[in-house]
Image (tube, one colour):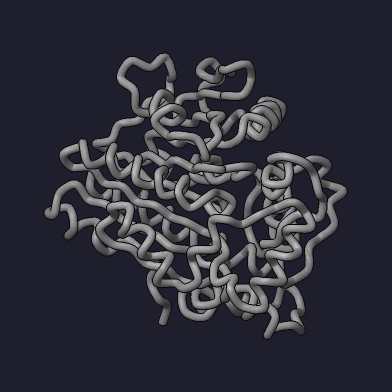
Length: 349
């Protein structure tokens, strides 16, 4: 939920936000908010990490609950349509979603899972995967696991970890790895299959022009597929034009971190409009505060309320109101709307 406390040069401060998110998730797992047996393998010296405050733990839980629900529903809709799906996590960092899916009941409905991040991050993750028996087991046949691109990439039957700078032209970086017919990469995807893009606190660190170019690139790829189905989930902070936002921006400046991608998005409507401008046909944005109050089952809210005592509920509400999960949908054919049109978060009674 919050940026790291260290100040470093170049892109290192941006890359370090991954460790902050991983530590926050580890803390939420240790406290019992989340179930994730894999995150400990991707956090250095995990046994020495001190728990984070309840506010961060709860925020991490709400974020995870919302994104998990969207991803799970995407896989279920693909399965109901008799298809396996593809997931591309961009700026994936230390995310463990692939292993959680691989250990679950929907694993056979996932065809390919791709993670893309800075080469410095993918190199470390590839090493962590190779060192962990549990992570290696999740990749399937060990004979199919291989390193590539000087150790910055890792490939297996379903899972592919790839290095790239998302700020560069996707035609030069992503296309050769994922969509080129003449590629040597084993990670080539099929645009005729339902494909979900995940951006978790990624686009906010990019210039708006670069993030728009990235979204528009994927739309063009799936427009060429006769029955292309493309979904996209974005999680990030927004509405930073108030007092809370100004404090956050100033604190980040001291840590050499800028948020150029947050500046154009001052409202929920602006978050959903981003998808429509890029070519998606439908889009929704919901704040974490709204997710906590209306989209999580009552029994779950009761459970997490007993995990830790929180006396700063107003501060929690303020923080959660400045983070949102938004999602967009593109369909290559109108007739697909009856099946895919209901994808999204559902309010709980």
